[in-house]
Amino acid sequence: MTNAQLYFAVGVPLVVNSVLVLLVFWALSARMTDLRITLSDRINDLRDSLRAELRRVEEIFDGRLKRLEEK
Image 1 (tube, helix red, strand yellow):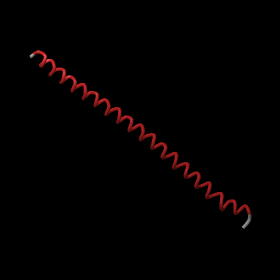
Image 2: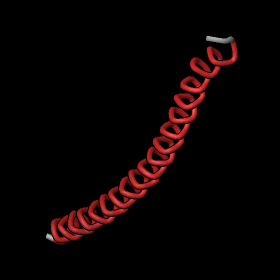
Image 3: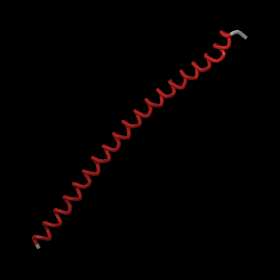
Image 4: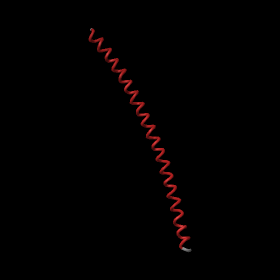
């Protein structure tokens, strides 16, 4: 086996594996970014709905307090 054949036998699998690892890393990174955006949107929606619910509860309590104060 010559030196060139040895370099190809060792170098080609290393390069192929490196490229595949980089592609997988890139794909997972993109998926993680999408997941982060989706979770952020869902958290914001939950926060908005919680604020709306708290406003509704506050209005109910205000109404009850006004009735108690009138009595």
